[in-house]
Amino acid sequence: MLKLWHLAVIREVINTGSISKAAQALGRSQPALSLVIADAETQIGYKLFKRLNGRLQPVPEAKYFLERAEEILEKMRSLEQFMFQNSNQSFQIRIACMPVLSEIFLPNIIADFAKENKEAQFYLKTQSSERVRESIASQQFDVGFAENPESSELYLSKDFSLRTMIALPDGHPLSKHKSLTPNDLDGVPLCTFLPEHSLTIKLRAAFESVDAKLNTPFSLQNSSAQYAIVENGLAAGFMSLLSVWLYQQNSERSSEKKIIFRPFLPLIHQNISLIIPKHRSLPQISQLFAEKLEGSVRNIINLTNSEFQLGEAEELS
Image (cartoon, rainbow, N blue to C red; front, top):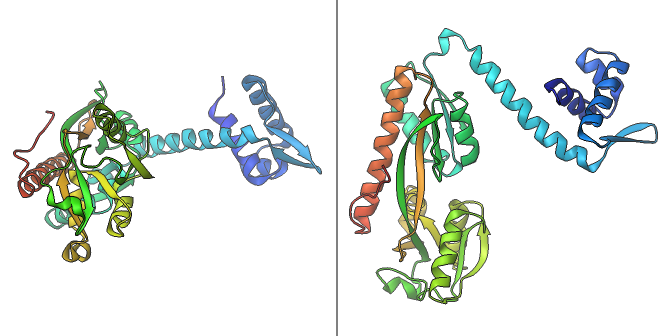
């Protein structure tokens, strides 16, 4: 079985380009490191390095190996920091958050909370939703925000359901509709999330159910990347109610009314969760911050639903 020392040695050899430099950096002998590499290669079943002009060169597979090794070593560093944090850090609130909420929403909440709680310290890390769930499940973070909630014995969650909207350039012919359906958008250029994203999958199913053509020349990583595409009239956007609210917070854009929004039917929802570790008691200040976050999300849902006359906030639990 590979050990952390295998990963550390291989990473150092790849980064330095030689066993001698790696040995110097790690405080070990060259023969010792050579044995570690040989043992790792035996266990994984293929060579990680080849010699070229007297230098060790990583094979293509080694680059993938290095990426995974970095992830594992980083998790171990984070775990060590968490386990050895001293009592002076009891006022630190550790937050793991999906990208869409980390740019405007969370910084504003943090600023408001910091004004009322001068002793609070904040550590905010932007991660994919999958990584957020891992960070909370490992009990290393206090509060997390992730989409597509999954039940777990390792964390508790407050789940929210956000319906999707169509974003249109101001003056677009479809803006005369109060809501938009796949038939209305048949063949209309759309920008949405990547093909494997849950919202894109649901959108595709909605179009296929009525034999409408889904035309998506823009498949983007997140909703904020859609704003410029829609503003320039290149496509309509497909995004959650939360992304609508985030766009409206940009006073420069919202004042010019470059984008207008219409509800999409049939109902498609983006599900997001506020999650906290289950097997670790949170400091009181982290509990207060989590409560503030929950209240803020509920307020956004209520206000935005009211603005677009969508009825009461829809929540999963």
